[in-house]
Image 1 (tube, helix red, strand yellow):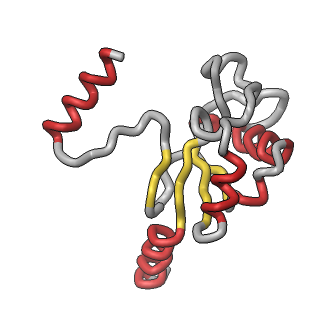
Image 2: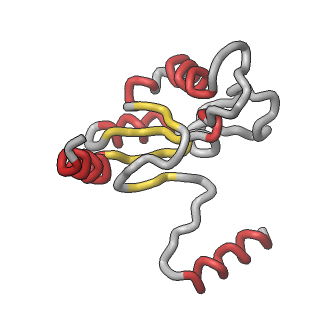
Image 3: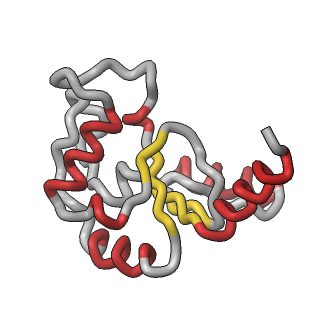
Length: 132
């Protein structure tokens, strides 16, 4: 492996990719894991936002549903289920890939994220979210 080529690929991913969480950001996920299926509606504005973002960036969706240790549902992996749901809602065309884990990206869009600036602020933010 040419390390310089690999570093350049990673740098390009970080410049050209937006990583977006699937559940709670695109798929409502109102029942949580529930029965393992992808059962809920699209979050309002998802289609238009993915369309807009895809004009400038590659979109990589990350999801716990893609965990390789997750049991299959109806003989399908989590990635297969997410891709099927995206096709049903005509959004797969905007997505480069669906992955397990955190991909290299310029930005991360996640409903459970806390923006890190420093540890003091992060601990305060965590405490404030716990009170909600």
